[in-house]
Length: 348
Ligand code: 5GP
Image (tube, rainbow, N blue to C red):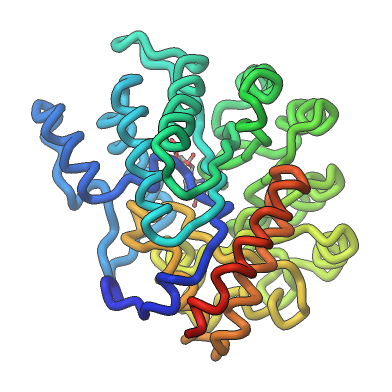
């Protein structure tokens, strides 16, 4: 389907809520990074999973390690973030929440603080250039790194929430789901919630995490990443589903990522169907558009062709995503107005 997306999906105004910065780096940007660091001997096949290919989740996490080698200076982060923002804008995304794990690189002098500052700088530069997209940032906790680092990350996020003029709006919990346990991260997540950071947590991305998901759902989070194995039909439980429904917690759903990462066997079995049929807020997202060789227009078209959605239903799906954003109410109103303004053009 790549490069063949219908014009309707390209012109559809879209909201992207689940995009990891280093997973979103495009082929073109990887090319520039490889030129900057030829000594690493990194080739394209090591940074992306092409059409028709699949990898285990573990292999996907190896890909991030390769990309991290290529992106290890403030200069790299600035270029990567600027390119990613412009690419989302070119794909018709009007509101983007980027997420990224602050990294310290002793060799280059990059600190976690300068990492976040640089992402913010990229957002501001794009704004100053008049790129037509509203971008916010979620600071990510890599679950692999345990309690102390999680607490440090929350403090950093809190600091930037207060100083970034509304650009840092929340916290993401991600990283290899088979490593570590959510209970060790609860104090950090609770603190984040108490100080006003919004929470988007990767939950039940792999099987047999019922206990952890139950614990984390009690917070409750403001959004759920993936939630692949929450429902009883795939080994989850009705009580988990009930908690999600009771608090009306939106799900961020990434079709290509889940199929290429093999947590979902085929598109028709994606859990989008389960939640969408129940009228639950379900937001189509890319996860890692670079690594999984996709974009948001393709993901909408894929959802529509797999589940038989009309253009009107797809429109509603993209419009309803506005209610799930972490930016304040005034931003939601502006976006809703934008959707109303462009609708006649998209349905011309
Ligand atoms: P970064 O945080 O460096 O900008 O983006 C890459 C990181 O995002 C990965 O190292 C990993 O921690 C996280 N990530 C990206 N995609 C996924 C995913 O599908 N599942 C989980 N759990 N984490 C992910």
